Image (cartoon, rainbow, N blue to C red):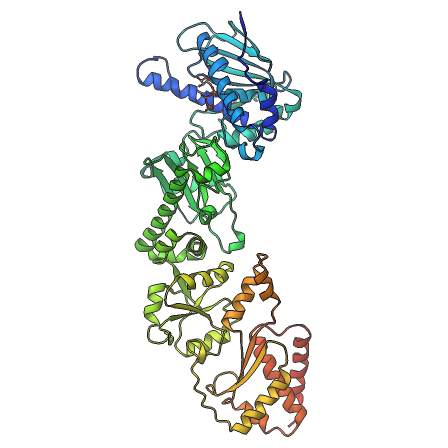
Length: 627
Ligand SMILES: Nc1ncnc2c1ncn2[C@@H]1O[C@H](COP(=O)(O)OP(=O)(O)OP(=O)(O)O)[C@@H](O)[C@H]1O
């Protein structure tokens, strides 16, 4: 038997490993099972080139739990190691890389490191107070047993404990790691990290009681915990629509069928595969981020893909697999990594191209998905200039009250004669709430205007940003002014009222519209238009909307505290004003006028509480008063 001492330069490595990675001990499974997979793959490669002649088709990995003996073993049927190899790889190579790793991260905060590295074989000491390696090489040499109890001393000897080729890593679990002796906990970790590894992995609980089989009953088939051939590693041509949808279900069992997907497959200048799914979303507040998982050669690495995937695509779901993303480095390094930047750009381009392709090849399908897609597209346009450039051509506007869609160019063409203002800008009229703003939509439609829906939470900020980026387009909400003024402030005022009548009406309404921010103006509109129209000027309303989205910006809280601005346009041409002017009963005159003001507020959704109660009471009175 050989005994020896692992070369220790600075300090005893094992307590450091334990302490350093305190919160993330579970990754020992990832490290050890990955090693077992590598050893299995190596054997297959050797078989491929004729250096190994045995069968390699049914190789498996077992994770064996013995809670009574307090051991967890990872057993593979891979290439195994000879005595010299154990000495070389475990005593020297593995140790020095673990040591190098610790040197590198000494003094850094744990958060920077955890989950982004590979500590390799020595991560077994995160849970094991004693670790045994029993291994037999494919080279037909005797099996050997290496053992180390966490001190720098180890033993290495021949053994007859193993007759078959392969390696067992047996951890004698330390008292503070006994949580891993729980079968469900262990299964959970295996499913998290190893769910898509390419070699079948079985979890075996040696203490589990076998159910007695009744006569003729077949034993339950034991299934591996992993899917060895996940969809993303296959060629798109081999996969059907069902295959993609089933894989999505495998990833997110509770989710609805996705809208569509993008299969990524890049081998130059970096390696990247994956499938990104567009989920069905109705409202932006339903969106869940952090649904993309990052893998490296089918090993799960993290759900935090913030630096790898562009911000707006964090709304997508799916899997990205790249051995080229440096996993062994800290977060801040990742942000500056040129490969990461390239991957980020590539994903953006792929997504934009795919959207463009569906838009061009199947516009009806694209339109039917716009409700969910619109959110990605708009978010992308706001946050990513490259995406913005491409998205301009497939951005859609849906007409209010009509399932008809327009691209920006199409909108411009169809409103060319009517909705261009004096600065030659196309005025995009929009509604944020079709029901609430119905009267205004109807008024705009009556003038031949095309009103589109911009009713998502994101639209409030999107409108402002896009208007700034796009030349020659101005967005105006349909209730921001009377229909006559929506496109241009035309100052024509053909009212049937005499100057005195105008002044009388003006004074009457000013007397009752006294709130700060409220303004009154008597004008001549069409006799069919409402007697008084309340509008909320675009700019101040937008500021208030933005402020209500929060953000803590002092300028925004300034706007939030500003009084609500409402303009009341009294339509001098409406016949009811003649009735008001000639009403001899002053109380009745006041009541009718007040009701008209309240009706205007009501159509803006601004009549609430006590004022609304008063309005209802007064209306009954007005109706009941005998002439
Ligand atoms: N199950 C195994 N079967 C055969 N050889 C193994 C096994 N586990 C580890 N080894 C050998 O020990 C070496 C060191 O392992 P270790 O996990 O520390 O590093 P690595 O796998 O090379 O790199 P990393 O884990 O950081 O990706 C491996 O390169 C391999 O040669």
